[in-house]
Image (cartoon, rainbow, N blue to C red; front, side):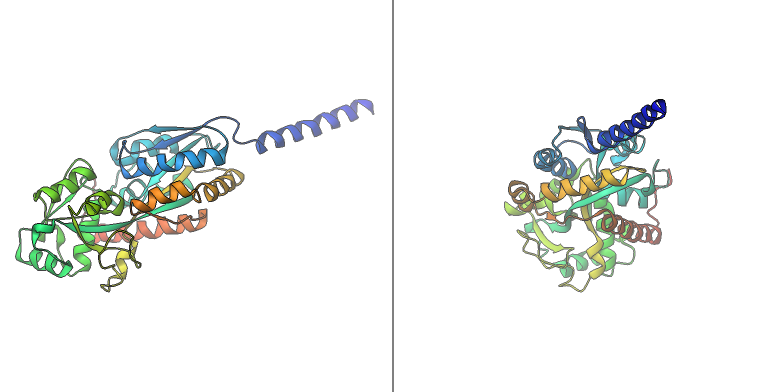
Length: 325
């Protein structure tokens, strides 16, 4: 009887210890993978939220840029990590909406990740050089029909590549890949500079990437893809111009872990992000860059990303833009 009591007590204590250990997540620093390079939209967003998020978590966040293959290298590093909450990803529209829609040989699918949130929306804005003579979308479309129009992007298969084609198609250009010339460059900064220098006619990119150019009156915005106006961007919205399909054309940043991430860990991330995204300094910095802070729970985030993927995949298939190799 005494032996049985000892075993029973021991089992109970073990169960309590296991529960306590589980409740103590996180017990050590958390690795946060940024799948794009320093200075880009994902890196800026991640490092801006790092301080208030680290305070909410209560443990250090180890930020690491794991770059390559348009965000795929860093994404695969998280895909292959243990689903214990100690390796998490700053996922982005390129890595988890555009790439799955554009690239047939991508080494992961959306099902390989569990999103705990999407917290930042970057409206897409289309801009031209102020000296181009293009004042609005009607002017741009007229020039496209005349011929000789070019648009710059951060590379073949990037959000910017897809955005330029999608905007032109929504405004009545049936074959945008042939009626306007795509100029792929190395990075969003180079793409914006090409319009500034006059080597490209226009660009459609994240508002955060254009904010400084617009503030300095170096580029003129002629469209934002949102339903509501974007602070600092004096331009018609897609809703104003009767193009609601373009509302889905936005950049975003979210946080994901590997598939199989437990419910209790996902819940903690939701609580931490709810605190971090209310930080006044974070909100000010992100708003100044043209970002919209909108915290989504896991169900809303997954629905949002899935809808984006389906929208982009249909466009890619309709225009024959899918990259098979």
